[in-house]
Amino acid sequence: MSGSGRLTTHVLDTANGHPARGLAIDLFRMIDGVLTHLKRVATNDDGRVDVPLLEGVDMGVGAFELQFHVGDYFRELHGTAATFLDVVPVRFVISDPDAHYHVPLLVSPFGYSTYRGS
Image (cartoon, rainbow, N blue to C red):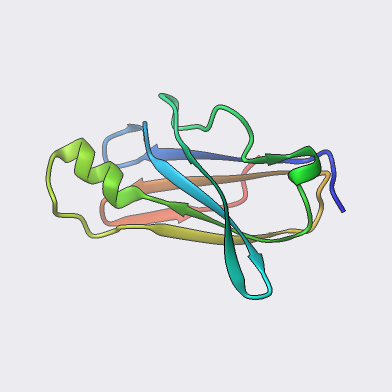
């Protein structure tokens, strides 16, 4: 079943007080307990992705995972190899393909939080 909903994300660098620009994100779908890679995107200057990660016929009921490559982002930003967080996985379920699912990430080099946004 596919719908008219969409999946979006937004990443804010709370340690430096600005959007996380150029942060790589991988999207996976969980199928029979196995992660299947769907796409890789990068955030724009506003910390967002230019188009929805999923929409239309690609939007369906199921379990998904976003993997935010925050270690690479902070290493590039600070020019150092030292980082505590590397990849932040966020697994969630889409139960209504006609709804808007927004998965924001607030991140610093040492911690993060997420929630279902609007």
